[in-house]
Length: 444
Image (tube, rainbow, N blue to C red):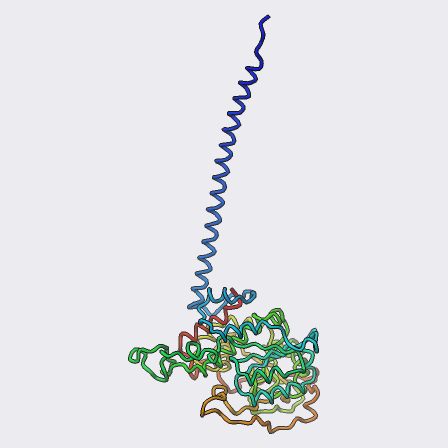
């Protein structure tokens, strides 16, 4: 019998199997490489699409085609990211230091470790009138309930005397924020005074200077434009930029350094904000004082609904979002006053009358005589000792608003309205762009 060489057959079969396996692996490797290439190309395409969309978004914001801004949720402040994405002025050492201070927690946490659940945050915005600030702070210290809330003091730049006054506050939690792009922080360049800037009614082409005049032919004055810049930066920062208030959905009260608060201001305000949804659902805000800054109220047994004033005004995040959507109207209106800008162009764009609810007796008084732009420096500084010439009566020391009162509506009141062209002082394109950047810096 002949032998059958089985090993040879087996070896041959193993060899064929090995060759087939190698071919399969090569085929699998090629397929895997094609898959990786396809994924890489897809990822690259997605990245480029996102990049182009962001570039387009930034470009559209540079010169807005609409005054309606997307209602996006704010993100944490990132200075390096903002500097790359927005055309902000190059910061000097002081500007950077102020920005760092803005991230510090409130003081007096050891004295007041918690805030009341339904507290109304108070924002005091100041410039450089220390004699006024002392009076305002003293009045706030006497307000009933102030120890349950947070006081935010927003500075237009940095002035040591103003800073010391605020650092001496011990009656509540207090947080200081400083406008890092205030003209007062930039003595040698925009937003401050630049050597090449046009002045007054200079002809830019003839003088070879920089600047865009307002509707009356006047070039920018840094001290004057700082008023509008500070208010707008403050609003965007308080509502969208601070950890302490970014998630605050209640009302926020705004007062100025020449506003005197009566002891019942906070208690009356809590009553007004609670009554507003029922008594005046079409009211956007609540005010501590009449829109006529010289008035002290009617003394009636009724609530008042009237045009929104600029002394002791308070509103919530819903209203802020409506204001923020009108960024273009605010930033391009040729008037250096924030309040006139709001009355003449922003509020009318809401589509209906903007009413505020207040009591029949004032709980706040405007006592200042010196204008903000006059400041304290220079030979033309306004001199005023900040002495108040009115008395606080017993009725002003306790809440004096009844929830049973009806509401009287004041229609067709005098004041700035749609159609007013503005007082000027706000024609420079650089100011327009900085204003737009403030509205976008917490939404990148």
